[in-house]
Length: 227
Ligand SMILES: Nc1ncnc2c1ncn2[C@@H]1O[C@H](COP(=O)(O)OP(=O)(O)O)[C@@H](O)[C@H]1O
Image (cartoon, rainbow, N blue to C red; front, top):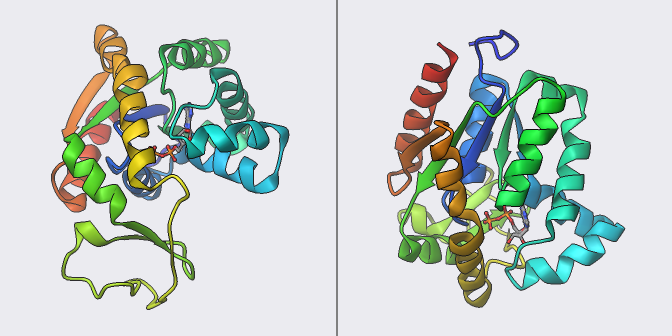
């Protein structure tokens, strides 16, 4: 399917708690449908690494597992959405995370005559999240995710993509921070399920399934939307 055709949904939102697989699935949708993945988490980590003003403010908030201010995140997303590549259509991964952000997104899109195509909720249980995140590592050599707990047959500490042996862990992927991130999700982000449900835009996927099964369900939803 060609994402440049008008039949492809232009703005997809992936909703779900930390560790639900939003990033993994967004990258697959990006390849499959030619959409652009926009991860506010990645943008914020880049801002922290670059030491920008927004990054300086975000750093300690992220390390505590809390949400960065709506003002900062909305500004970062708005700037990125202006990129010409975003005209192909976008998958928002990690945004919106509050009702204020959802309203800002609606207003931002309305300025260019666009609207949200669908919000897809990746549904998972809290216990599974904690387990997944504590087994989440990234290969330092190729940058691919290395999720121990997803694939118990893997050789521990060896990347199955490139054989690299140096694994890095995100600063906020530790037990205390994960608990705060889950709490922030339930309090501030979960209300968005109702927000998009009320607007007839909500779709749900059982994200307790394996990665391939979740991808299959997401593909079916996106193809259906494009019809
Ligand atoms: N839309 C957002 N609003 C506020 N904070 C955000 C947003 N997106 C990302 N963040 C910050 O970045 C952190 C990491 O986000 P992300 O990479 O999406 O990971 P995860 O979904 O695993 O929590 C969050 O815990 C939060 O501090």
